[in-house]
Image (cartoon, rainbow, N blue to C red; front, top):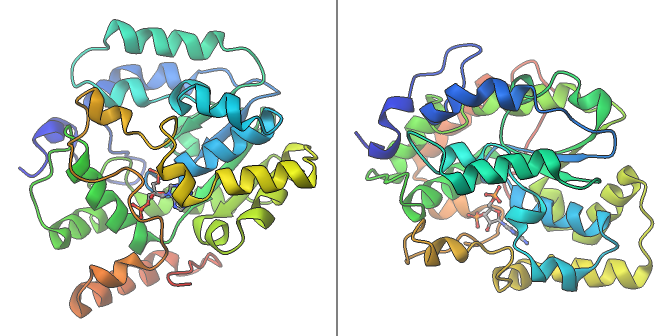
Amino acid sequence: PHFPGYTSGLVKSEPGKFVMNPLYGFHAEKLYRMQPRRDDVWLLGFPKCGTTWTSELIWLLMNNCDTARASATHLIFRTPCIELPFLTSETELSPQMMNMLNAIEKMQSPRVLKSHLPFYLLHPDLLDTSKVVYIARNPKDAIVSFYHHTKLVKRHNFQGTLEEFAEYFMEDEILCSPFFPHVLDAWSKRHHPHLHFMFFEDLKKDLRGEIEKVADFLGKSPSDEQLAKITNHLRFDNLKHNDSVNNELGKRTGFMNKDGNFMRKGKTGDWKNHFGPDLNSKIDKWIERNLRGSDLTFITKL
Ligand code: A3P
């Protein structure tokens, strides 16, 4: 009842299940078969974990750090999200979205593509073919960020409280759930030479250092001057005012409510302003349960 927009698509996740808009189900195979190319770079990550930020970072490194060109075209056309067409409609693809999907197939190499889908719903040869960057974020801040996102994007139409949203999140009922298998699967592949696994919190701590690591991974050698330029370009306060990235476009197209911002706070630890002690302890237990037996750890405050 809290998600009128997604009612029919919300199913409690079971092993191997994935929560997505029902329209996706009719096209899942098309995305699964989307052929990766040798010179593609794919950015993967659970929603609200810094995927927009990282897409812009990768695009810049792949395009000679050309910030002027980056600012001239909206990010969704430069690093298209392959499942976006299925998130914009319940029932059928608009001609515009169908075109977007065809455009991805025809895009000039080297492509930078983005997806929130987990590895197992993407082409099985993806990692052996293309380079993949995976961005992870601590789930506490991801919950808070996603909660605000569901208030911002009209289609979500979430009417509940943050506490209720957090419960949905932990029950794997939120779009792109379940969270932990998504992250843990990528984590288990992190030593693959084609995968660069990175954390939102590290980007916050040392943006330039993390950009350099991605550049190394992509085989790029930006000059000091270029690095300084894109580091500055990628800072929260600058991206927030960059119309090609900040998704203010969504307000003009009616996709988003006027209140709130896609570039919201950009902080680590905002969960402390949102969770009471009971909810926090419940989330701690949920995290602990899901990370048991894994060496993955999250930084929840900086
Ligand atoms: P908050 O809601 O916590 O502010 P995604 O792009 O995967 O949807 O992730 C969105 C989150 O990344 C939002 O988090 C957004 O503010 C944050 N973000 C985007 N660009 C950022 C930047 N340059 N620095 C810090 N956070 C950034």
